[in-house]
Image (cartoon, rainbow, N blue to C red; front, side, top):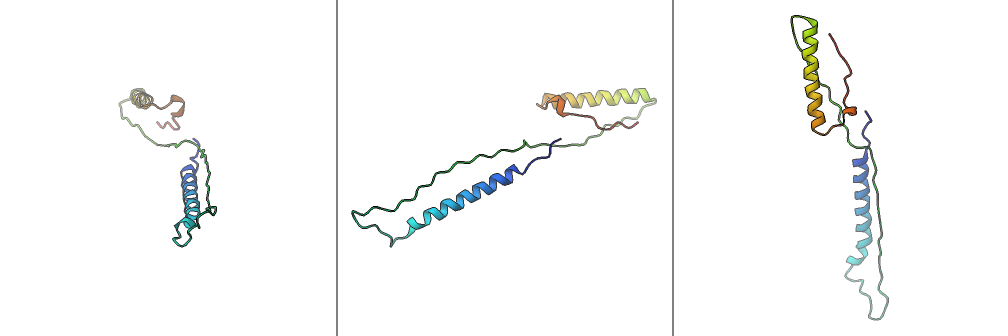
Length: 108
């Protein structure tokens, strides 16, 4: 499974940096004593920006176990397989892609 990137952290840093830059750019217009005389060219601040954030989609790794006790090995394995298939079917029915679901360990 891919490891999730720090995309939310990068987006938060970008938003914070942009907000700080806009605040600094707007501060000169807050000065009441900075009135422009009539007929003079007023000072202007123009801010243009764009941004794009890319990252790996969020992932979830979950471990689950299925255990059965039966009089013989075949019955126990069949019951475990049936329950495992029911869990997989529920996950696929909830929208997960079957190729993203895997069995990693079987212990008898």
